[in-house]
Length: 318
Image (cartoon, rainbow, N blue to C red; front, side, top):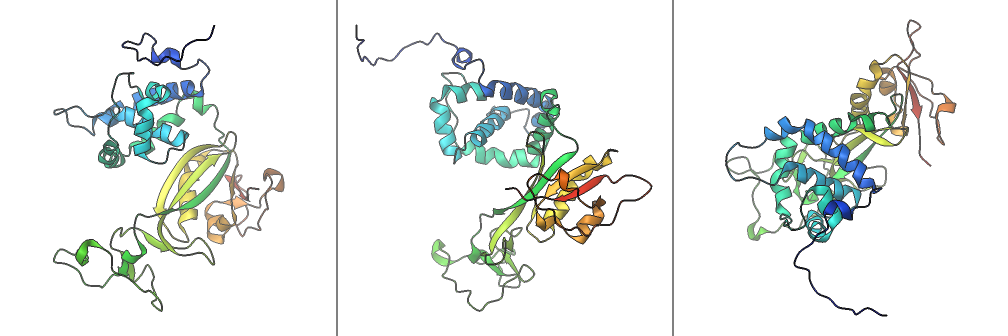
């Protein structure tokens, strides 16, 4: 017998959100690890808020929602809130009941600075990596490092001479009509020494390589362990020719205190004399490089008194 296509709304729901998520869903294990990590951040999160006033959206829910945005490649926070409004899986992961309204997307904008000032993102990553279920997956002797450019939210038109006209309080002069004036940079020599962005003074003019256009940007860096490809550290710096190597030494530093040798895979940009000396590396072993080209390194040999803490490998992914 064919059933009728009847569309009627139910006044009550008797099925719990927990029962609507299958038992073997990957988010179940992730949610357990995330919740245990958030418990360890209770004091840090409490210090960011006043003990009086109207209750805010729980920061734990904001962090869980941001994880979903990364997992499912959601383009914006506005779309994330739209998805949270109707997706029961998202509601279960974040901690919203089936009748709880999703908050406005502007909540992220108002709370982002608060979480950044409290260094919550870095502490959250450390808390995740410290969980026993995650820690046993991490390699302690094989790593890869790389950097990427992060484009600043600043127009190239805002890159103006540092000695240009300023207002009474040092601010750049505003353009009448609220629109940027047309600019012609032909024949003008611009550099980070003489120019700066009036919108984001910390952004630097940098190009990815020869023949590439220069953009106002920052540089992000990531350190990955090679056993399961998990990120173990991240760093943000100004864009410069030395930033990648300085950040790599900063991130790999805690792992070089161990007695056994470690390998660090990287691209050709890291293979310089200063980086080789500071990392105390020896000549790379071709057997340790997976589908890579080993660049000739100029680092000094290991000290005969003790084994090298790091074996330097130039690695290019295929």
